Image 1 (cartoon, helix red, strand yellow):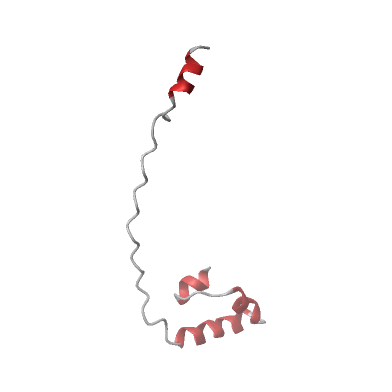
Image 2 (cartoon, rainbow, N blue to C red):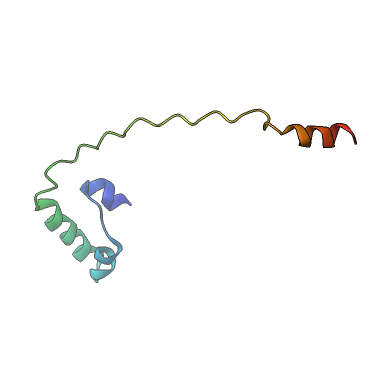
Length: 72
């Protein structure tokens, strides 16, 4: 995690365990930092969220169902 913050680049787990020592890992990070980065690192803007349709408070029922429940 500290290496990711210091290098400003993502560090994979494979890179971490490929180096036999901390010094070799640091050398790998320095070598990777010298490589050109991505061309454009600006985030892609999100599309606006589509509003959800409001849920009805009660479900409409048919007359037959209403009669069944009111006669009970």
